[in-house]
Amino acid sequence: MDEQARIMQTLGGVTLAGHTVQGGMAVPPPHGHDGSDGKQDIGDILHQIMTITDQSLDEAQAKKHGLNCHRMKPALFSVLCEIKEKTGLSIRGAQEEDPPDPQLMRLDNMLLAEGVAGPEKGSGSAAVAAAATASGSPPDNSIEHSDYRAKLSQIRQIYHTELEKYEQACNEFTTHVMNLLREQSRTRPISPKEIERMVSIIHRKFSSIQMQLKQSTCEAVMILRSRFLDARRKRRNFSKQATEILNEYFYSHLSNPYPSEEAKEELAKKCSITVSQVSNWFGNKRIRYKKNIGKFQEEANLYAAKTAVNAAHAVAAAVQNSQTNSPTTPNSGFQMKDEEFNLDSADNKNTLLTSMFTGSSGSFNLPNSGNMFMSMQNPNGDSYQGAQVGANVQSQVDTLRHVISQTAGYNDDLGGNSMYSPRGLDANGVWQDAMTPSSVISPTEGPGSVHSDTSN
DNA sequence: CTCGATGATTCTGT
DNA sequence: ACAGAATCATCGAG
Image (tube, rainbow, N blue to C red; front, top):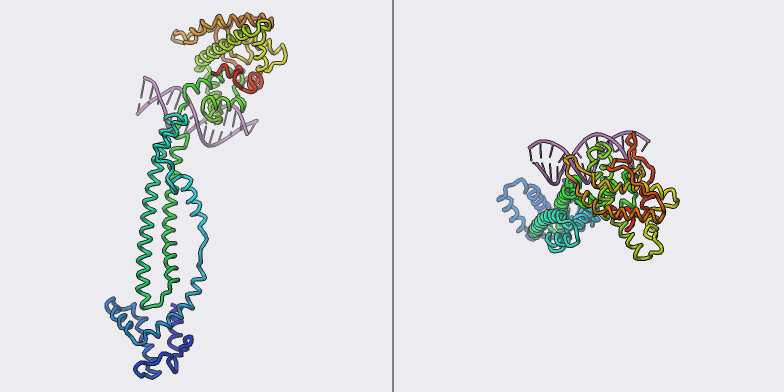
């Protein structure tokens, strides 16, 4: 266009870097033509070159051949070389070695991190699933995991196939273009640098296609991730054991069912769930309990019984321990408990222990009366399993009462509360905060504490 | 398929 | 930031 016009003008008229076209040719006319004839000749040739695109292929081919054999060809060729040398430099300088695209780098990093790009991780999904099972994760979880892995490796496979295709196509095209350029270099000046540049242009084009591939692969991975790892989509019920542990804690802290951060961590560890899951569970439990206390009555009874049984077992063990260890210090077993209860006043101790055996309004509502076990029935009239265990434990509770009366001389009045009654909520439906479980019952939630005893 | 249970999320108030 | 409340989405028994 402009460049061509300029070249035309230069060729047609003035001077060409050392080749004086006007007046005298640097290339001597082979057949004794004079200067004006040569000028005319060049004009013809240029005209033919410029109009070659307007001609049919055959015609052009013939013309091309004619030009190739033309006596002026070597001269024109060297002129074209010079022009190219001059104009080509400016083009070359413009686009050198572009820096690596940050977006491409991001995509590469992500694909690498996801195991789509780069070396194959492990030896396939089976190995991953096996590893997951071996490390103790739940089986259904590992199935999900392997499913995810399988889908991921599918994506990986497609990605690599496509990538290979692109690379192959790129190489083929590059070879084709290079051959074409070599072919053309016979008629027009093409330097190796130019070929190199052309190759890099081709590579750039193909890498932009590759980027699209990488982008869509990343999208696919993202979708897969959200499908498989979105907890809401794949809600799993907690294990029975976990629910029991949580319920035991809830019902034994009914007056203030707000586990401390430490307690949550402890529960999370015991239940093999996360702390936020524990928080969710307590959030849901509180609201649902409050909404329908009647519905949870049964459950509350059940867990109260369980808790009592466990406590009795623990106490019995403690009693045994105190008896065997040091008969002269009969209160050693309870000393330990006292420390864990974090009680420093006799008043508190009294309240606590009294409430333990009366089921009265103390916040520590762990054990109710031993009588409770015998009278606990569900609406169908069937006895709870806990009733049996409760009967067995009666003697232990008796022992406990005995020990208490001996050790501290506390009143072991067994009150008339024969049935568990929901406590903790006041008339306004607000949880009473008489004692903070996390600070009073078990500040550390460590093993051996009341909480730990009752929730295992 | 229905329906209650349940874990998670979102919105709102404090 | 946290709790309550409402709601969503899924599970699982029947």
